Length: 369
Ligand code: 5AD
Image (cartoon, rainbow, N blue to C red; front, side, top):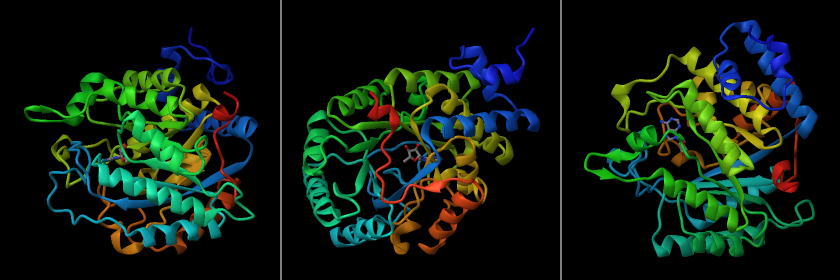
């Protein structure tokens, strides 16, 4: 006989079969029970704060050719940009003034020495300009700059002025090796290898970072068992933070013909994945991805209601936002910074959370490791 859902939801550990059952829920009443449990557990373990990371998309130049991604190297229709140092520093100062407490710096993947040097320099300047009374150790910083070497991670950590608090987001995209390979290989070339991604995540840990990873949900060919294995991989990596969102086709990418799940189904699966990850990973930070918002207005607020405790409002200057189209109709391309105020209001009014203003919001798992 199958266990009653209420009983299953109270457990602290889950078998693969139990996780698969929770991920597969579709009946509205059952989905609501999962949602309420994930939200309550988040409050119980982490409190009511939602932490804000101002997202700055500093460059869309990329040397990789990931088949799902709109800014892959071979998409020649994209106009490439790199923000000037002054522009980025102004964004960081705006974030600090707005009480964000932390920023996330994201760009395409590059490993040339000039770029590595430039990032180190930028980190030094951000630190110098954002230390103030409210933020005595400067803005918290998350880097999302692709696979690098241990030495580069160390170099950036030292430059950041906060060598033991720097964070890095490097999604594994999928823990199914066959799926990973098919997502990253152009004919004749295997451009990315899952084992390298795992090594990069280990290097980040050794280099002293708070380590974030995640996957795309609803990829063509991905099964519920794959998603269970993804969560097991988060456990094995002992990730401090998780960022994951629905897979959305991108016209500039290479997978359009493979399609995507119908919106409503994709939304529910994504929310279930967030909720089950909360139940299984417990004290990690989980970010509500922008891709949720693209599927549905207030999608990120739904993410918070399902166990997310971090949101990354886009603070990239308006002019370049439309050139950072990882997928079609990416949310936030059309509206200015004022929309972030709306999001912040909704966090309080709809999700009944508090804004963790002027706080770094490091993951509890990292603090208690
Ligand atoms: N749909 C959803 N997410 C995407 N990403 C890239 N392309 C897509 C897409 N088509 C995500 C990847 C990457 C992050 C920066 O953006 O997971 O790690």
